[in-house]
Amino acid sequence: MKSRLKSPLKKSDVHFFERVYEIVRLIPPGRVTSYRAIARCIGSPGASRMVGWAMNASHSEDGIPAHRVVNRLGMLTGKMHFRHAELMQELLESEGISVENDRIVNFEKFFWDPYKELI
DNA sequence: GTCTTGACGTTTA
DNA sequence: CTAAACGCCAAGA
Image (tube, rainbow, N blue to C red; front, side, top):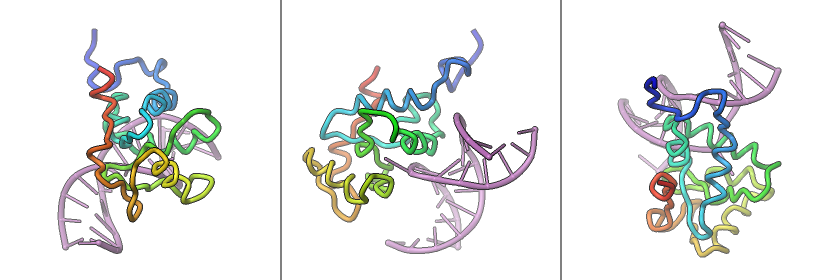
């Protein structure tokens, strides 16, 4: 078996978007995670931008809680891509997460790491 | 094949 | 704190 330090699957088997969606769907309500954590769980730690890109393409998908994905600082950088700019914050607050200045309060407390949870 | 685009992250000034 | 420059990597043109 050849060394595959990055992707555990062959290139033809890799469905980057689907993997992102699969993980995002598993984020529990009231919890959040970061683009980098998802990318790292997939096996491409440096593909955090792609995770965000996958979210951009997730509008046609169903059941994707994109509001639970923020950047490493807990900032709602992607709120502008929702139907309304404030929808992301509203969804988070409806799940008990406080947001101030586009940043999640006590981000570490609500952070959900798929790499740890999906062992 | 090349080139551009990004809901990111890190570093530097 | 802001601003800019890189690096990163998958997808589309």
